[in-house]
Length: 228
Image 1 (tube, rainbow, N blue to C red):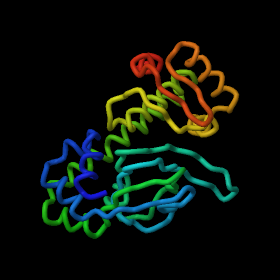
Image 2 (cartoon, helix red, strand yellow):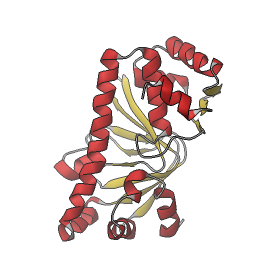
Image 3 (cartoon, rainbow, N blue to C red):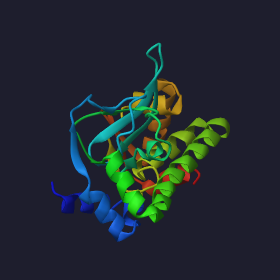
Image 4 (cartoon, rainbow, N blue to C red):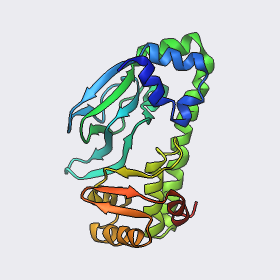
């Protein structure tokens, strides 16, 4: 896969497609391909900054594990999701673990290469700030829902976030490789409650449940169920 193919895959995302064209070219000119196997870590909490990443193929599991081995699953992200910008701003270690759920292909723009771009064209800092602010906005919405919204709405909203690439894509019919245990962990719900809520969505014709996967059949009705 060459840079032209990278560009085509990344251009379906809202953030990258709205970057100034020279910035797009600068990022890809300095990017390198990374291949991960199932279960391989891209980085772990506490690792030093290593640049900006985008998923081209596959899915990454973003999580944190405490000293007792309990995992907090934050998200499962796929193409064309960009991440890693927090450490670019503060220069501090990684905040979470990022691990491939299966074979995964990413592009990496190394930290020093990206800082060089920004030194030469400081106006691009604003574009990276927009990437970070989009995620901050979603985090606030998630905290609000955890406190105020019923479980059914939270589940529908999380599915919608995933099919929208966490705000970076238009929702569409697609199959999510998403075990119910993982969805339950992201929502702090029991496996039984999550299964019951998904079966209700299936009965309405909004999703179809399979082994380890959830197919979105009607994105518009999923949006209505998420109260957005």
